[in-house]
Length: 253
Image (cartoon, rainbow, N blue to C red; front, side, top):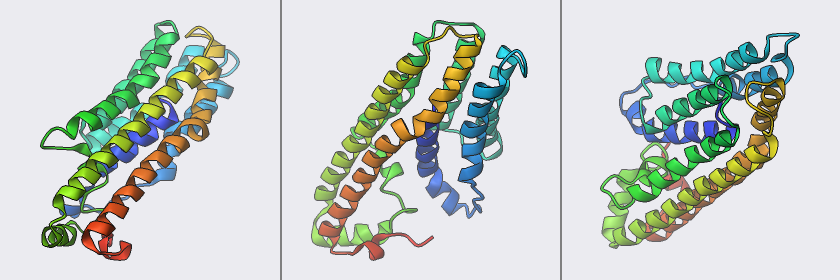
């Protein structure tokens, strides 16, 4: 299963990228973040740490049962909620690769590579997209779910500040890219440090459960803080360029 940092950042980014469509289609969102965390993190971590032993579920059956929760959640979002996109698919592939590593007993150094590859690919996508007509930073931070874009664009045109905000968006894009690069480095380091037993063993399952539990405070929080700084920077740039205060810029849900 992908580490909690990968899952949560993929979830957050996926929701940002699809927020505008959901809003325009007037679909009532019934998201339950606590349930998502329970299914993708807490339950798998408990199964891997406590119940994937010969005395309980068995090593491989316990591993597969733990894996079924995040896979089931990913399939539900892809098929039922129609969240088909680069981020959602990447998250599902990451989870399936963990399953392949565990079942086929592939050397565990590939688990560390896989854990680092997911945020690395997302970070590269964010960075490269800023040089295309479709920068991902606009989907993540500069969208009409977060901000009153029509009002902001009107003020930018009036103040001749459009170019200044484009520069601000590029800087914010570098910050978001940095958050994913940080996540990739921390993912690789933590995985190499914790998961040292061969795949397909009881110790491997327990170490994977420990990795899942520790990923949130060690990886997700620091990289999320960088994302928050990027949003704060963009808001500051918008306030200077438009003359609007925070309350005037934020979209009312």
